[in-house]
Length: 211
Image (tube, rainbow, N blue to C red; front, side):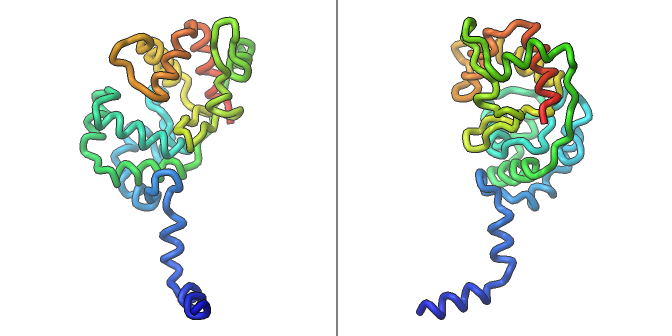
């Protein structure tokens, strides 16, 4: 019996194993299928998810679980954006998983940090500020800003500073609202509430240069 099973495995088409290997480990989406669905995304997020417009986030190399979670939030209406909400409304679950797998597999383009931002941001990013109750950014996003896919913590290394600034300020505005989002969004709102405009500007520039 064992010989029969071994023979079946050895004779199985390579495509069977290739198909399994192509599946994203966190979403089970197909990067190959996602490539064919991502054409409309390039208008804002750029070829391969490397946006040239600093107001739109880079998706290349982003956590697939994070992308999937955000698309689901846009579709459900729990996260609001006129353009993204409309796009997500047309996506099936399989589409979202495939797009998440595709962008997660793309190489991210690097950014550059301002030297002036380092004195303020490096301390906050790596150690936080215990006196203000601010945790280290690196605790969730990693020393290079790569994020943690298993926890849906996003990649922020290399992200546009303009976009990061806008997101942190939006998180800050969400803090304390009765209808504020739950989960990781709520965590970020609580952190951003303790950041000054100077902190946000410095951190946004700093993470743009992380690789």
